[in-house]
Length: 178
Image 1 (cartoon, one colour):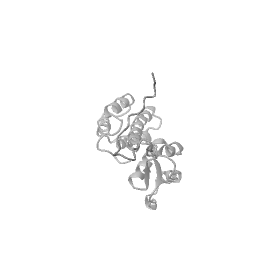
Image 2 (spheres, rainbow, N blue to C red):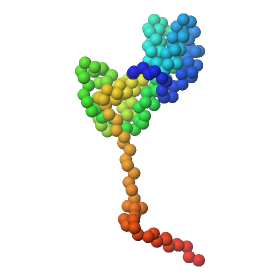
Image 3 (cartoon, one colour):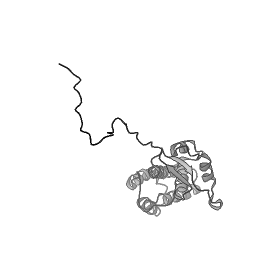
Image 4 (cartoon, rainbow, N blue to C red):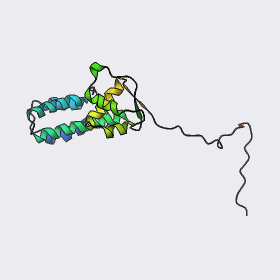
């Protein structure tokens, strides 16, 4: 997922930092400003990379795992917002370039049949929700996938249309008789 220079979607940086703070006792004081700066800039990918690096160093630290979850939830909110509406049908419009093909992209592309909606693919995906959303977003951005609206245009009632617009309107008869 490409880093953003500004926060987007539903993740308010102040709320993300507020949710992170109870879980940051383990983080060295000199690293906190860097993490907060990433979040405030909306660069949640960098914040997540920083936290995952710490998680590799200290795999049993529950607070780090909770911090990762906070950032992942904010990224999911961002990607959900970016991909809305979810009732659009996905179709493959261009094959993947073999060099850039990933296992995640292959899994997503195997589920796209032209009739399944974005929500269908998200629900059926074997990947975690964040990986699914990020992969779909990347494939849409690269032009490998297209999302078409399934909205059916409203049918016009032919009785409501006047076939002779120059004709004077007759008042409707009064159905109530006294």
